[in-house]
Length: 153
Image (cartoon, rainbow, N blue to C red; front, side, top):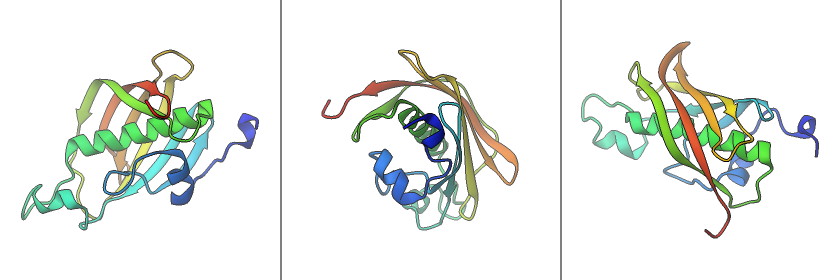
């Protein structure tokens, strides 16, 4: 399969085939743009039904910043997995985060747009530049480095 044969969009069933995360920790609902090995844009619909909103915070529900970062990392891992055609069960684990900034809160009802761009895909420590956007405004951004884990390790 050439890079031009890789999907440009993915629905939730396609995502579930590519990543090991499951409820309540899968933080992508759809991929709306994919330039193989270069860029990926995923959507996370933030709903009040998510378990973290029970305690973060009562009367002022906010998506924890670490979960916004995790959502960006999941989108980056998916970009890398598709670029490398990794076998099922492979995992790109978060290895380091640099220049992380949280700019605005994320609330139930928001649609989180996760934009990741490859900084170095074909290296021993692949990196992406990631940002999360709500209503056209950046809510978080970071440079994320990954480590590859083979299935069963």
